[in-house]
Image 1 (spheres, rainbow, N blue to C red):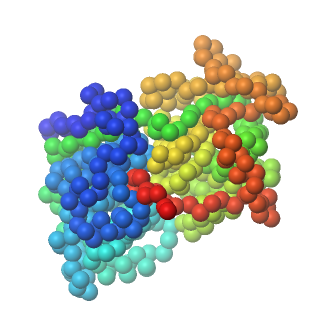
Image 2 (cartoon, rainbow, N blue to C red; image 1 turned 30 degrees about the vertical axis):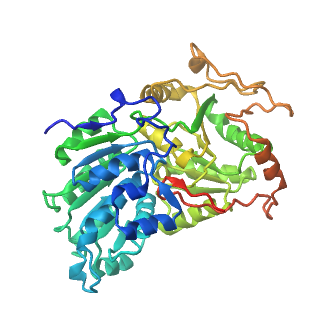
Image 3 (cartoon, rainbow, N blue to C red; image 1 turned 45 degrees about the vertical axis):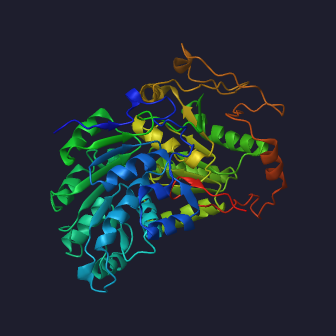
Length: 480
């Protein structure tokens, strides 16, 4: 297999993220890609005019038909970087005929989670809305019959999780013999050992002559090596330092004993609320049982909390996510099912109640905040047993996390972690001392006054403002 030519590889890229301009600066216009007017119309209706760096670099290459490995920070519009050129490439084959035979599956997008599948499908539907191309999504946890009906009616772009797709293939309701483009979204997760058997079965049913696209925020050396077996002379597109967290995310760690982490979260939420930060928190745990227990405990502490994990049905997961996005739920405790594909614009804060066992998962977790140019905080609660996990994360990030001391704390931090580690000075609060007070970045006076002026609902929660999905991850036109 030939080595992959690189576009803006880290070795020869500017330090700001692989683009001559800053990651948030205009690098092109969607009109520069020679996209069909029907696609440009759909993009304009979403209010976008300027692509992000990953879109600006990947879209032209995907349009040439080359295989691509695309790496970029989370929240930078990777989905649109492959969906838009796929729609453009399939347009000449689109048909207005009602016959299912005229609408075979031509592009297959595989994702590791149901939530990510749903999000990609929403993107595909929005940007093909003025064309005759049909899109569908299939994932587990829901009734198969509506999916069967959609597949039998014909669909050109199919988004799927591997397990449910294999169910449909076994039932002969899906046929991959005419697939021309295969996409592995969050490819590092798709290529880990848990997915490999299912993935190989699916790939064996797809024509060898195809275009294969791999997109992710993280590509370990092992995953890159494994990916070569699926790609032909791929072009590597990297618009940020590999395995980097977004510059818009302010990271801080607190050294907290395991038994005190729940109290730390309650204090963090209280102090941020007092400081005028939005009342919205995504809290990650490592296990389903721990997720459920922490959610119940936070509820007892008076925080409106929901839980999201693999033991919940898809209907329960959808209702919980909708409640979180609308502001009915203040804190969402989740396992790594929410680490990828959960796109909530302006998510202010992610808290790692436990460090993940995989350093790459840490980047995906904190990538739920600081998306599409917004600012965000990522807080890690670390106990002495997690030192090795913290070391792995810092090795991947190529820097140490700021360790914020807990002033006047009743809880002694893990001494094994403080030895030899520099700490970031955090000024004490003017209000009565709280052992977990911290402020990674200052809330603006305007934000604080607006938060104080906003009415609260019956549960004592300030309703969240309407959220606008950053489907492309690019810049929106200012409203007038």
